[in-house]
Amino acid sequence: MNAVILLFPGTNRERDMAIALHKATGKKPTILFHQETSLPAGTDLVVLPGGFSHGDYLRCGAMAARSPIMPAVAEFAAKGGHILGVCNGFQILTEAGLLPGALLRNAGLRFLSMDCHLRVETSDSPFTSRWQKGEVYRAPMAHGDGNFFCDDETLARLNGEARVAFRYVDASGAATPEANRNGARENIAGILSENRRILGMMPHPEDLVDPLMGGTDGLPLFESIAGVLAAA
Amino acid sequence: MKARVTVMPKNGVLDPQGKAIEHALGTLGFATVGEVRTGKIIELELAETDPDKARAQAEEMARKLLANTVIESFRVELA
Figure (spheres, each protein chain N blue to C red):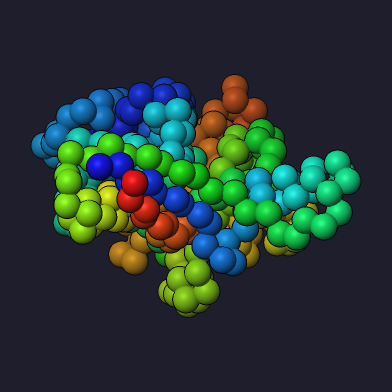
């Protein structure tokens, strides 16, 4: 599997992401600068990692979503390409119109840096197939703008088409208001595109993929996508 | 010609910064303040001299970049 990690000015999680992808696929991903206008031939997965691209100017992800590389990413998506956006990467994907909704300032205005628990809402996606629906795993989060918002119609579609990938829950798996620290609609932490090949999520599964990091809770996500794309 | 684009969160979209300011004003004793909303103002210097064309340009810029119409509305004024 050939993974490409996009690097914008202010991206800072590309190395964590590279470690996770390398571990799951056995192959080092390519890191590509935002000023490129095409993806390398044979790209199987495009990853937009976390950080603060362009200093979060205007809105988080707004500038990065208009980068020279993004038309190539949109074309890749239109052809059925697989894309993962984590944290700032999720914000960029919504700003680029590749995923619905938007990420607002956290409801409590605080930057949240802590572990959270996520419940897997569907195993029917190339990113979640190694989990069972309803499984709960731990992931670190670190964001100031993770408050997922969308209108009622979009929310109904996301729920109806089982496109909510993960929700914030407590350790027992209950989607309580207390577990929903950033104020996201219906505790939504991650969503899938209509063709289920694009995943955006706020927490960082790439930061729990090795016992040395304190756990391997995030590894199934990378093993899922590596398994799906291994044949590719 | 100058254009001023005012971008505001749409009604129904949570504005935690507005809420925080509202609470702070209450703490300062401004008891009569109702809801507070925050947004941003972006001023553009345009080469265009025709007001209709300048407005159309500014509106296109707002739709494509300055505002995220999922969560924000915008208004263009010419000066």
